[in-house]
Length: 608
Ligand code: G6P
Image (cartoon, rainbow, N blue to C red; front, side, top):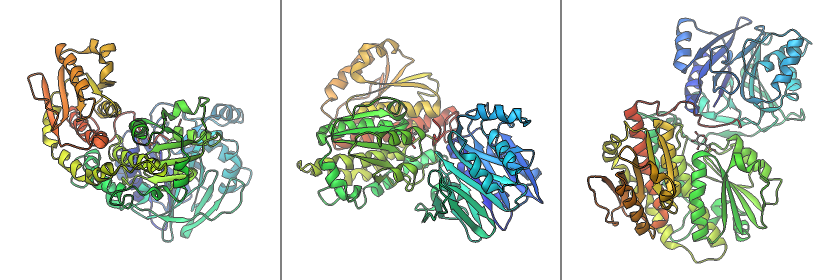
């Protein structure tokens, strides 16, 4: 998704902005650009493709100046091209960077064209530059002009704007897309993601919906709310160290993040379990009462987070006895859901800024839920701020677009939720699961040791065009997640089926060119799964089975087996995720794809 970074400083800002853009690359983008104010003139470079292309332009023709804005674009209106890349200018008087979508831009564009403004891009954003120029021409300053035009913008936006007439001013506005102010010493910054600014500050102000901010020389920061009232927003210190934004010794962020899972799973559990019991208060002071009155749960999420929700359905129904519905946010938000009495609304999101999930929460708040809980990885994100309760997954920044550690820590949080709901309802303690959770990080470590074996297995996939993933019970969502990972980063078409559905269609696709991947934990569905696997073998399919050491599935010509350590049945979905992540990773590396930034995808989808 698009990214914004802006700075008003006492020093040259080009390198600060460029480094900010590099740090935003993980979000997914197709072009980038930068405008810096130099001796009263707006100077700009834009480039199609990677930030490295912009850096190359800057190396031959620098943009010196103490005030600037920069952007990575992910195309929504208009193809990826230099002309469509931000910043957009109006007569070299105004420069604008924008995240989000201006839904009423066509009508605004018609009016501006009728007034004589000509457009040089196909974007919705360019209307903002001309609207500002129109207002500035009436004698307003940049802040006042921005304040006036935002009321007429429909849709969602985070903006960073500057004017040639005001040499040390950047104005920002937020409505529906995240924007933070970085508080420096005698300097101030703006970004769509705090990670973009960790090289210059760890102190941030998270703007609220409708806020407008003005950054001036000497680090002056002025914020007004939607009504135009001056407001003070708290300065928060960013929790994760800057090291999280570097690859360390790993070839890709994704691999680093896969290998971080034992540590982040420990972090996700820390302080939330006693010896034999879950601490319900981890979810906040009201959790006990709320969970006690919870009769149903609705879980809403997108992408990988949705798969975590599907696993939680099995857990909450089996271990807490509570009926659960799970749905993707983009469907839920346009339905007319029936909310039975006593229903808790739960959102899952790594970023806490996914537009559909956020919209679903806002819609849910108009319905008769007993409360809302966000399970999220980003403290201070919109989802967390707008929910009644939240539980942080503590995965640390996840840079690889394909989600890995964020998913497994969500599963940990969801198991804590399951145990907490069960406990609050006075059901017998699930001590065995609590004990098994404590042992989970070490088991994950044992699975990661299998990396080189999985790398060897991956060679069988590099030339394939399709793959089928099978699982049963809570491992069906793990099969879905395995297929999603393979699609996302290796571009191999992959589908997942509950193993029992095989004979109702997908079996027709099975032949020697179709690898079939199955997870086979030692649970009560094992014998059924074994029969399904025989159905594959009988059709000449190549089987790849990730199996518990106790299940007794042996390697044969047409069956490759990777043996995993025994794990408590309840936690097997967590453990079996890891080898599937590694498999996708190695296949993608063999295929030579852009593992951390796969084509067409974005890390945080802040548009609908
Ligand atoms: C994008 C990302 C996925 C992620 C999904 C939901 O599609 O590429 O990795 O699962 O958004 O994001 P969230 O931040 O809400 O978990």
